[in-house]
Length: 243
Ligand SMILES: [Ca+2]
Ligand SMILES: [Ca+2]
Image (tube, rainbow, N blue to C red):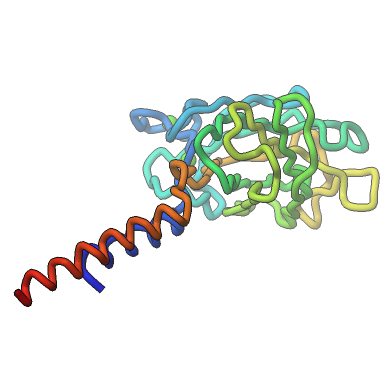
């Protein structure tokens, strides 16, 4: 195989193994860093997007490093998004939490991830929901935060199988407090705790990832023509050497 053909084959191979890119991320840290984890930023740290409390949940800041810490690599002034003001026991199932909205234009194989610290009295169960239009939300995955004052890092859900999540100008994900499965009540994160709407969830490293959509791929017949052309060129070159 000539060097030209080898190069072309390698180029075609690498195109089909594109890696995931971070589309948007929030690390909630102050920019520039200051001396207080009680101050932070709601602005994205990578890409663009917006966030908001859902169902009257209030937003503030708290340490991203306490209680074992989030996955944030920052060691000085690591802040998380502190949330509280959740529903009273037995009320508002899946209606209180935080919403994150981004554009995934130009990306497919979308995934969503976050770190979450549950306080002792916060809801043990999280429901992740998605919306393709910012209006109608659908359950996607649930998680169990079965310990209080504890970070659960690397929560990840894939939207690769959700038609319309890719290349979407208005994709929204919500993480909301959910009743314990099969019941009409919230569970407390701490096995010895009692749920209260004043409990807190603290987010960090909220991340949308995806794979950059390739430019239109040439038809296989185009590859064949290109390869044939190189083979002919290669054989002509060899003939000239023989002569
Ligand atoms: Ca700060
Ligand atoms: Ca942080």
